Image 1 (cartoon, helix red, strand yellow):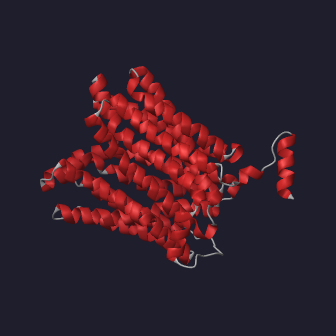
Image 2 (spheres, helix red, strand yellow):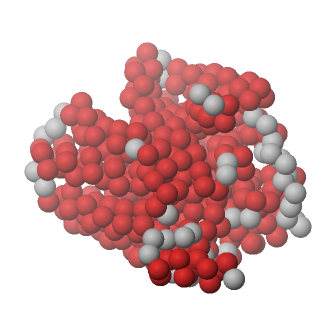
Image 3 (cartoon, one colour):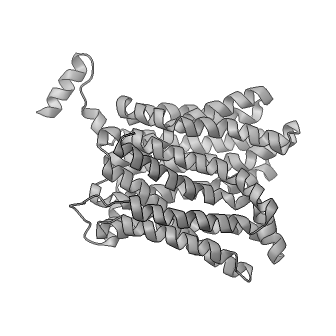
Length: 406
């Protein structure tokens, strides 16, 4: 393995741990919050919500701080160390308000670490390899999300606080790994101020397509995680194990195809991956509620494949359009909007499951994804990407390249 590939693998493992710990606690929420503090289901749901709120609030803020200082390493290390301390502190919380406050602070620290790792990957990668590199990181992200919950369930059966201790220990290890392996890449240009960096990243219309694809991909993931098991249980009487298997049919292709599709986006271009994959993904998502068990499995696998087309290509596009000195702020915006999608997805799924049937709920979810993709397509027509100026086969592509060169 080349040195550059080794460090990318290390970064993918660090992102894996962040996403793994995100879902590690979820299976034990009832015992950790409802039973421990005599809380309602709504109050228990805030445990997940406040972390997403911290991601949304601080994603772009930490990115702007990092850009202004021209450093990533110190923030990544602080993020992991703070997360480790705060996960352990949650085990000591005497009441629910204290627990939720600590959870919010932990979310702020964790987004600092993983968002800036993703930024550093773009900093150290050549443009022609953005998609492949982000595909490696996306693999770590997807595997972490997929494996955290089942392993967390096993740990929670042993001791309700054990998932918190394990998460704290894993982040402590990540702190050491960050100190040893994370190195800053020199950045010549820095924003004039933190507010200026946030303003530029927030108002840049070129960033709208990758932001919207981030929202659509994570919204659909949160929507599926909540609604699909309920659908399988009530529609087909599926057991918990069978429901988990069907989710794995989606998650495994989503994880293992990140790198191949990311690399393909470097060769074929971002637009074709995002537009084609996004439209097909929205269409298949919308029909899940009309299918029998075998077709559902096939469509879930296809959705996993199509989702794998979206994440690395949208991250690579973000690298294409973001100025290097303000890239962490753009990445913070990307992850903040994605976190908003992940927070909205389960809420909308729960609401629809109570007000309409499952088929209509999946159609509504698919239409929202389609709306995000449609707006992105419109905006993509106004975005100038490096792929627009590559030589193409045939006299038209050659003439266009010559004209651009002149």
